[in-house]
Length: 75
Image (tube, rainbow, N blue to C red; front, side, top):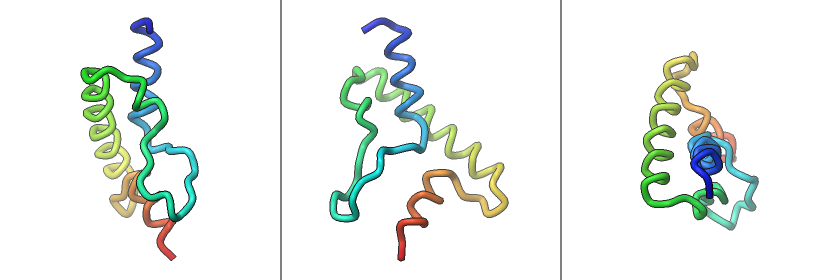
């Protein structure tokens, strides 16, 4: 995998988007997570944390996109 390909996967993993899952499947990781090296996973985690903080700062309710996605699944 080239550095450019790995960086694209890091960006994909860092976002709040996760492919849809069924209610009984539980926690899902982004599929690209499993293709990353340990160092790239750490970069994706750090970038994701920074993105969640920015999203929450911009949201009128102080919620990140991940928090909104979780709350949307609660009946």
